[in-house]
Image (cartoon, rainbow, N blue to C red; front, side, top):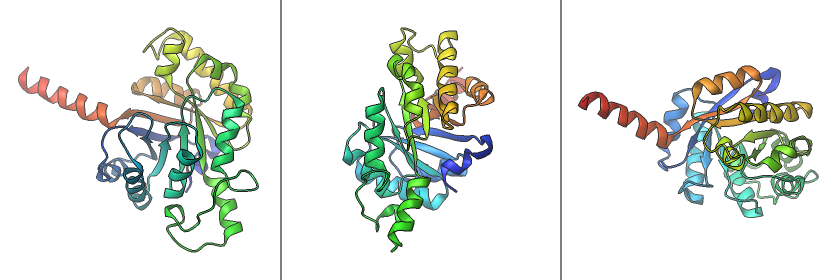
Amino acid sequence: MSLKKLFTNDGVALGMMLSGVSNPGVVSMISTAGLDYFILDMEHGPFDWSDMAAMIGIARGAGIRPIVRIPEIRRETVLKPLDAGAAGLLVPMVDTVEQAEEIVRHAKYAPQGQRGTALRRGHSDYAKKPAVEYMARVNEETTIAIQIESREAVKNAEALAAVPGIDALFIGPFDLSVDMGLTGQASDPQMREVYRTVLAAAKASGKVAGIHLFDTQLAKSLIEEGFQMVSVSSDIDIIVDQTAANVSALRG
């Protein structure tokens, strides 16, 4: 089942961020834990294209959906994760309709976009496919989420959500808090009001609202308000914080 199908009937998809561990085995671990998807962070993480392809390959076999956060909007950065078999993309720092349209142009096959066609790749499990039917299905199933990380993006949220081919407005709360002069205050009332603004903009176009957080209680609250694509914590935080807790308990 594609990630987009999970959103039907107000379904919620739960994920986390992989930002530091490039061993593909971690993908099997988090799949076993019951997550619906993970975000492979190629914006801030150390992963190269080979790391990405290996981790996507494991994910496809393990039944968890790989979403790749690309470093910037370029044809190559959009095309390679999708050809490797990513279930979708998370694109950082999208402020304008023109940026959103460029993403769709690179990510979608004709006639919706201009994605280059290499059909026997990881996304097709290297099998021969009937081109027209397969390309239409991939266009429908691939999730394109754009990150709302600035006041400009919030101001343009309704227009961004209305771009055909964009499936989700995904808030990056830390960068957004910096731009709003509220650095790190993800639960601040002004931030919560912005979350509602983005949620309303997404819903107005029949799209999904998402967010990445480190606070499970805040995440639960936003799910109750209508957020459907929610990512909590990261490999780095889980490893370091749990280890620190163990050390504290044993030395305390």
